[in-house]
Length: 167
Image (tube, rainbow, N blue to C red; front, side):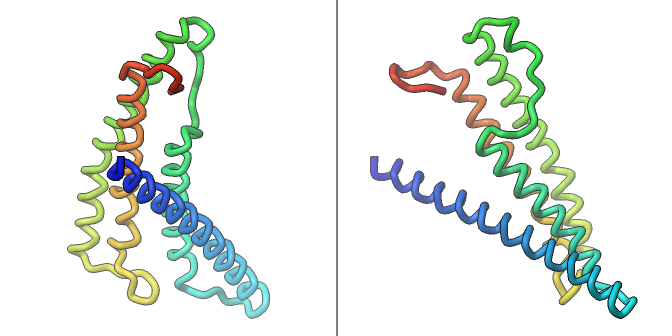
């Protein structure tokens, strides 16, 4: 029981950190975009490093947002069969879709790792000496996290339901 509580506490910490990072990056991204517009309108010159940095912030925000949506089971879904099958069958179909989503995330992790490795070898940097590979490392990390979340949710759909518990 103590181990279970420790995992829950650790999980809550990471969930909160994920949300704080997401909100912080959105604020930073909007602030930098506003600053760029301000400079272009006031002195007719933009700041060179803002645009590439904001592009990479968009990548981080998109993947962190997708991860939060996956965690909360609020990602985009297309539901065309729920009204045509029994709830028990629908739960199994949802489980299969979750497992398939996990497979896709895990498969996409490998090319994402190669992509990051290529930029690591190339030694390219962004503004302030931020390595380009670091800015892109969010891809394999978030794909693994989302894949793990899909996998756990898919397994849960196929496991026997305990009395008094909802899936």
